Image (cartoon, rainbow, N blue to C red; front, side, top):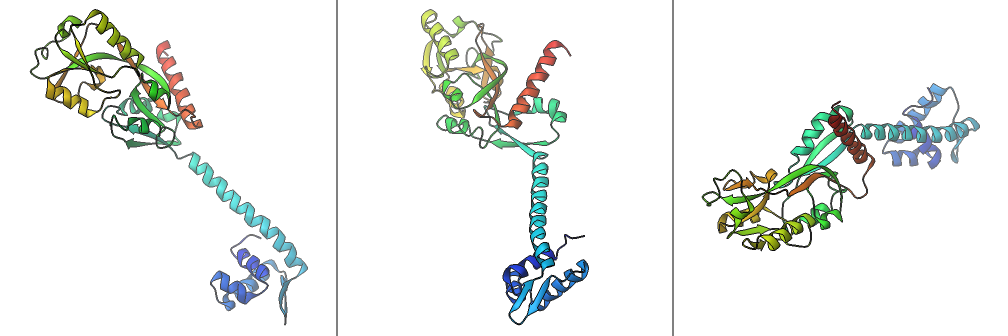
Length: 303
């Protein structure tokens, strides 16, 4: 077979015009280089070099082998790179962000039902902090550090930074500290909140929350509203527990704080939740989203 481990030594000798110089580049002894060249000539049954007092030079056969060996080695390198690329595609990583308020469980529930369609993909879970001051920088990393984050999303600032695939909605509830006068109630009327301070997100970023705020201000002014910032973090839940106020909450966050009780309210307000994904999604992200869409459509059709 023409291609073997001796060809790189042959090319180096030809380029250097000297076995001694080639030996220096290859970190071998001149004797070892000479033995390799002699072995190659024996294997090919060809004279590749002319030895003269001025050095060595390629024979006509050697020149032909030199040219083709260059192409052969380059082709072999490309073949290896192509194989590695294929291996990489068969071991692609889907990076999923997770936090206390944006847990990845919803994604993993979907993944367990669809993973047979994506044997080439592996899931990597990447934790991040729910910090109301830094959450926008996390959202901006979708497409870099994360392929997906599962979250509730009605934020204009979030939707400027990512795409959103809705999976469903979560009902808006309220949370109260244990021992609060409402804590033992199974369900509340809006009038039950009269006289309370209701903590909710600041106006101007969430159309849904702005609508709820407007409704309360116009028709239920007995409820006093306190801004809790545009985005929640654990400190908002701590403040609710410490002050004894009422916190606008979601059914999916009922277990966030062990000292708070989440209670449904007799209203129709709910917020969408789903998959946050990059503004410029990769092929693997689009493929996964299509599979999710197809699967959910089949479920709705009862197939």
